[in-house]
Image 1 (cartoon, rainbow, N blue to C red):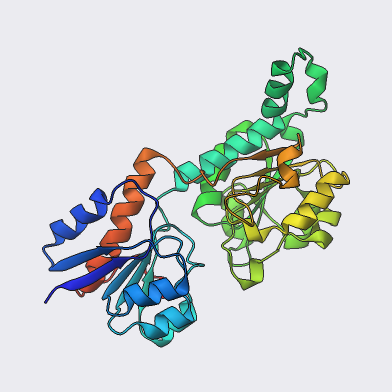
Image 2: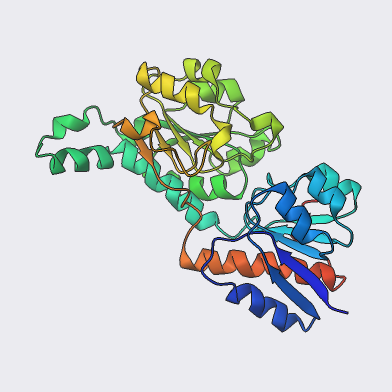
Length: 319
C-alpha cells in the first residue's frame, strides 16, 4: 500500500527535486500536489495523507485534528509558524523543518542590507540617478569601528553574520537568553540583556523565531528607547516588528532607518508608507534565496518525510 504524501502548497516552477528524493527512497509514495490557501482546503486534501510537505498553507489545530493517518509534517524553511506545534504533539505527529539550509544566504543578505545602509549606497545611488552628484546627500556616515551592531538571537544565522562583521571593525553585541556570556565572549561578542542592546545598538539585526513571545518584540516602547541614529535590519519574520510603530518612529525621526526583507503583510501593500521613505530599504523576502540554497531546502524537506516514513529519525525534528 502506497504512502500518500501531500504538498499543501508551493510556489516553485516544478517539483523535480522532491520527486527525485521520493524516487530514490524506493518507498511506495504517491505524491499529491495541491495549492491550498485556507484551512478548509487543507482539511479536504490532507485528511488521509501519511505526510504533509508545507510551505505557507495553514496547518492549524483544526487541520491537524482532521488528519487520520499523518505521521510527519515537514516545512520548507526554518520557521514553523504555519503549523500548530502543540496540536501536532498531542496527536503524536512529528514536525520537521530545515534549519540549516540558508545560513550563508540570510547572513549575507543581512550584511548587505547593513552595509548598504551604513554607507548610504541605496540613497546615494538614487540621488545620482536624480541628477544629484553630491556626497553630502548621504551625510552623516560614520566609521564602522565607532559603531555597535547588536543581534537579537545567537543561533546559526546570527553567528554566521557575526563572523562576517568581525573583520570590518564593528563592536559586536548579542541578546539571547539561552546562550551564556562565556559562549558569546568566545565568539568575540558582548552579551547584553534585551533592553540594554535596544538602547546601545547603532544597527539592530533581528534573528529570532516568530513565536508568541517575539510577536511585536520591537514595539513603540522599545523603538522610543533606541538611539536616534539607530537602524533596524530584519531578515527573520515581519511580525517581530510592530510595523505601525516602526512607521511612526521613522516619520518622527525617533530612529534613523530600517532595512527590511520581511513585512507584517506579504506581499507588501503598495500603499504602505514605508515604500515612500528614503531611509528605508525593502527587499521581497529574498534573503533565503540562492539557487544552491533552494535545491538544498527542497531536498532536505522531502528527505525529512522519507526518513520518518522509513522508520528512521530525522535530525531536523522540531516536535
